[in-house]
Amino acid sequence: MKYYSLNRQAPDVNFKQAVVDGIAPDKGLYFPSEIKSLPQEFFKNIQDYTYNEIAYHLIEQFVGDEIPEKDLKKIIEDTLSFDFPLVNVNDDIFALELFHGPTMAFKDVGGRFMARCLSYFNKNENNEVTVLVATSGDTGGAVASGFLGVKGVNVVILYPSKKVSEVQEKQLTTLGQNIKALEVNGTFDDCQAMVKNAFIDREITSKIKLTSANSINVARWLPQMFYFAFAYKQLANKDKQLAIAVPSGNFGNICAGMMAQKLGLPIDQFIAANNANSVVTQYLDSGKYNPKPSVQTISNAMDVGDPSNFIRIQEIYQNDFNIIREHLVSYAFDDETTRAAMEHVYKNQNYILDPHGAVGYLGLDSFLKNKTDWQGIFLETAHPVKFLDVVEPVIKTKIDYPEQILAVIDKQKQSTVISTYEELKSFLLNG
Ligand SMILES: *Cc1c(COP(=O)(O)O)cnc(C)c1O
Image 1 (cartoon, helix red, strand yellow):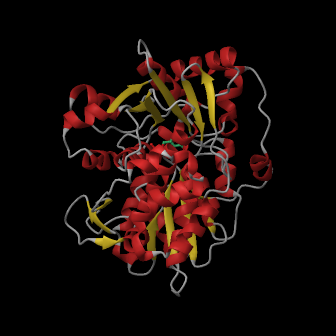
Image 2 (image 1 turned 90 degrees about the vertical axis):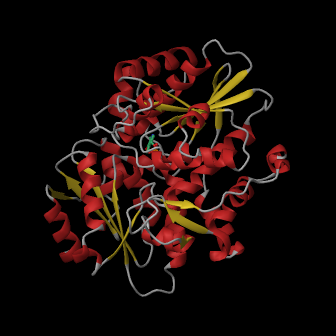
C-alpha cells in the first residue's frame, strides 16, 4: 500500500516507510492512497468472525504484502490480548470499554500494534531507532508498555510536569529498561512543539533515527478501526440507526472510526465529544477552523488545542465542509457538566465513568435527545482508576486498584526534568 503526504510535497512511501518515519519529510501526515470497501457480506456476517479475524480483514489492505499474512496475524493476536466489552449503561446507550489493556486506556491497541510492526521491520537492521513521543497522559504509558524490552528501540517520552494523573505518571516513569521519561516544565503543547522541533533538527536526525508514536503514525492510528467493528459485532440489535460518540483530543480515534465506515461498517453518525478544547465543535458551527492554545481540564488526555488528525478527517470527506457536517456532529462540555454526568450515571445506573468517557456519554446523550429508532455507543477510553483524584470525590466511593495499577503504583518514579528545547537536544545527543 502506498501512502502520500497530506502536504503533498513529499514522495509517496510504502507502509514500512510510513511507520518508520512517522511523518513525511514535508511534515505532512501520511494517508493511504486507496481505501477499498470490504464486501457487505463481511459486515452482515460479522458475528461469525473472531476479533482477530475482524482485525485482520480491516487492516490487511493497509499493510499490503509488506508483512506476510502469518506474521501480521501474529502481530494482531499479540496486540489484542484483552477484552473490549460492550456494556449497556441505560436504554439505548452502550459503553464500549477500551480500558482492559495493560495501561488501562484505549491507546494500548495502537501502541502495541505499532511497537510490533516497528520491531518486525527492524529485525534485520543493526541501527537503533528512537521513538520520541509527547504525551498528555495516556499515550506515553501505552507506548512505553508496548515497546518495553523491544530490541533496537529506545523510547523517550515527554510529559507536562504536574499535568498528568498520579497513575499516569507512574506508568510513564517506572518501567526502566529502554524507556526514558522527560518531565517538561510546561504544557502538553510545549512537549509537542519540542518533539516537532527535534524531528526537523538536522544535528539530531543526522545522528539518531527518530520516529514518532503519536497518532500521526499510521501504525498507531489505523488499528483503532478495530474498536468500531468490535462494538458493532456485540450489538444485539443491528436494525436501529447507530451513533458513535468519541471523546476526542487529537481526533485519531474518531478518524479511525471514519476509516472503518469507509470500509463499509454501518455507522450512521459520528459524534465528536470535546471538553473546553472545542476547536472542532466551533468549526462545525461556524465553518472556521481556529486552533487555540490548549486549556487544562479534568479530561486531560483531550486537552489539545490544534488536533493533528483533523486534516485526515478533511481528507476522508474530500475537504468539503458540507460532507463533513453530514457525518460529524460535535458538542463540547465544561468540567462542571462532566462531573455532573459522572455523578448522575453513577447514582442512576451504578456505572462509573472516567472524565473522558463522561464527555463521550454527554455527547451521545445530547445527540440522542428526541430521537427514536436510534441507539448509541460511547467509547469509554480510560479506566476511572486512572483519574482517581477526579472521580472519587464526585462519586464519593473508593475505587479499587486493578492489578495493572497495583503493579506500578508503589514503584519509584524516575524522570529527568527539562525546561527548554536545548535540554531535550542535549539529552538525545548525549544521553
Ligand atoms: C488519547 C485519549 C483520548 C483522545 O483520543 P484522540 O485519538 O487523541 O482523539 C480520549 N480519552 C483518553 C482516555 C485518551 O487517552
